[in-house]
Length: 318
Image 1 (cartoon, rainbow, N blue to C red):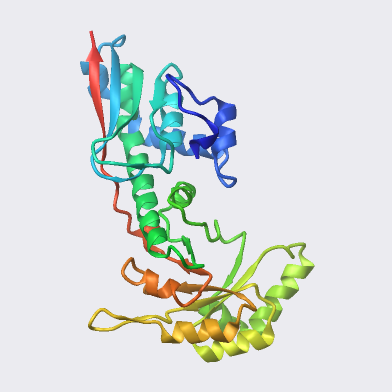
Image 2: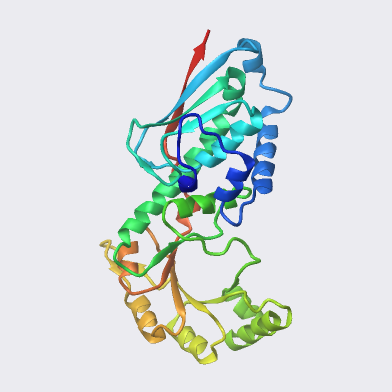
């Protein structure tokens, strides 16, 4: 978040500032690679419309406006986008990443070369709108689970190439990241269990490799879809978390049946971390949280993004 950098008139993020703000899984090199690739995709041989209509030396000032209420995110990324286009552009933010803004809030400005601003306008807005949409949705889920022990998690259901930004947006909305990719956590699902010949076999296989390949610190989670599987996992041990999948039903009248999930959580009695998934929606998440589960993972946070409506109003200087 921008909490480490206090907004001031015409403040600018340097390379060192970016490094201190970015989440641990997103370094400056990765961010710049994403920005440069995206700019290349958009620009091609150049912005012919801007070049043919805007004089090279023309200056402009743009004002970022929230056209609906929500959590703003992606300000740091936008600053870097404009910096990569033209280091002389000046960005100023009146809020920080993760702040809630009301409809009509003017939350930032950019000034400098008009051509450079127009080149980056759509790209920067796309990033901010997507990240803000994810952060706003996450914050709504977090509010619904307030007072419970449950933490809202994202999943790997992110758009290719945007995962790290998507996951950062979840954190800015008050959620937590699950695993970043296939490399930093073992998640044993039904296909792995079937291929390995059963729950005991798959757990033994995972722990053999975990201990003999120098990866003892990688956590292990296993999926269970029935209470019988939960009992078997508890007998085997050797895992850190049990993913209680599809143990929630939504009845025809809209009411939520969490009895199976509740029974599973009671059975586990805190011996393992518990995570609920399946049928997680804004309308069901409070009932799911009430079962006492530790985590609730929700793919909709990132795979069904409703962008927050943001705009950039530009005034050209003579």
